[in-house]
Length: 113
Image (cartoon, helix red, strand yellow):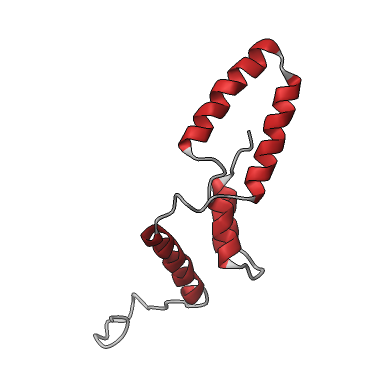
């Protein structure tokens, strides 16, 4: 089964020098299989390894490649999706903002918001 490197995806979302489409970035995080499908894949992989069923392994690899390109969005509630998009767009809005303060300055009017 294909593994998802979440750290690589998150680094790409936040520390990228090239502009990224937030929809595509979020789509990469969405899992390929639901929990029932994962359970079936693990059980089938046991028998594939035990009996050396290479034809079945090739079939599951093909299915996995198809599922990677056609991810189901059904598991995401509208609130979860809205929160994820809001978090990503907040990051986009504050990307170029830098906060400057001088801790040695004792003036009460500076550095405090």
